[in-house]
Amino acid sequence: MVIREQILNRIRPFYESELIKVLIGLRRSGKSVLLRQIMGELRENGVEESQIIYMNFEDFRYSFVSNAEQLYQYICGQRKNEKKYYLFFDEIQMVNEFERAINSFRATWDVSIFITGSNGKLLSGELATLLSGRYVSFRVTPFSFIEYCEIRQIEKPSDEDLIEYMNWGGMPQRFSMKGEMETRTFLQDLYNSIVLRDIVQRTGAKEVDLINRIMEYLMLNPSQTFSAKGILNYFKSVDRKVSAQTLYNYLEHIQTSQIVSRAQRYDIRGKQLLTTLDKYFLTDLGLGRIHNSGYKLEMGAMLENIVYNELRNRNYEVYVGKIPNGEVDFVAVQGDKREYYQVAYYLADQSVTDREFGVFSAIADNYPKYVLSMDKFDFSRDGIIHKNVIAFLMEGCKTKAG
Image (cartoon, rainbow, N blue to C red; front, top):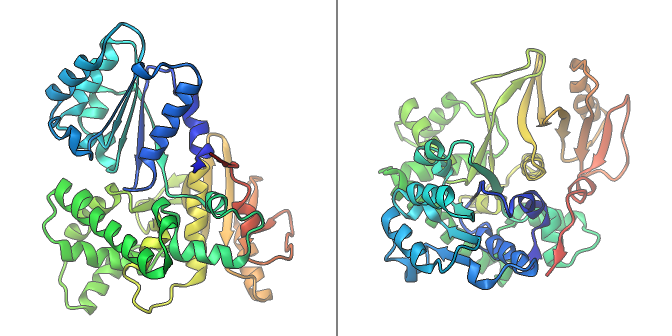
């Protein structure tokens, strides 16, 4: 088992806090395992088993709990004394109006509460209203490349290891699959579950085929600048008429399922967010195989997607940087800290090198600037740091086997 240190390091300071810990992530990205790891650490720290209550609402044994009243009554029946309790609710969004019961526990008992969900709207609506300022959220993602190396027991990853990771992603369960066919079947089943349960059932979206078409476009075009005109032209080419409003509504539903993330454009000179031409990145590139029937994805785009996910894993806010005559792949922001990144598959010749390094000439500030590629030779120049992308990915928080 991989102990997810990178995420746990951010959660540990809140183990005893009255703030509600909200873990949001793609279905099957490891949220349940993460809760079990937290419970294990609490036991190691002296918390009695009787003070820990865990409920997974995808488990049929809890099917009798479908609303806030039933949840409240059940937990009251489990609470035997006035000691501090640690409450863990997995896939809590399956309980109607769960926010009311959660708020009551928090307000009236000595508790530490952890909840998970697969839908981005978990932090909207009543939860945000009732618990404003009383929760802290954490993003749970599939295994990062460094975690992939941990589970594969790879000490010095090769280019082939990174390519395998880019092709099949980091969904935890896929590592127990035997062979490509079984892995592809697992990813297909996972994709269908996300579309049917996290998008169609929870949002009331009616056109499953349209959702699949939008997903097909996003999966075949990772890291590409998104425009409504471009995707509407794509639908026109496959004889499908779609309005721009419908497109954006469905795209919002897809985002809430956590299967893709949106990076907004940021005007570096004007220091403001822009409202057009965002980019969308797959949370896990393995899911991109589902709609890939022979079309070879561009390696540079896949690498850019991997770097975006890694920066998000390191708790950066990540934007696409706009400059007067182009863009910087990523502006990574963390408090007062800022870094700029360009990503290329290889700096194949002088013109490519000049292009990737040259974009930074339009940025006058002194924040760190990086060019990442598969090259082994160090091309750093003019204060701009070049890094091999594998070396960059391996800088992340070390995991440990458990």
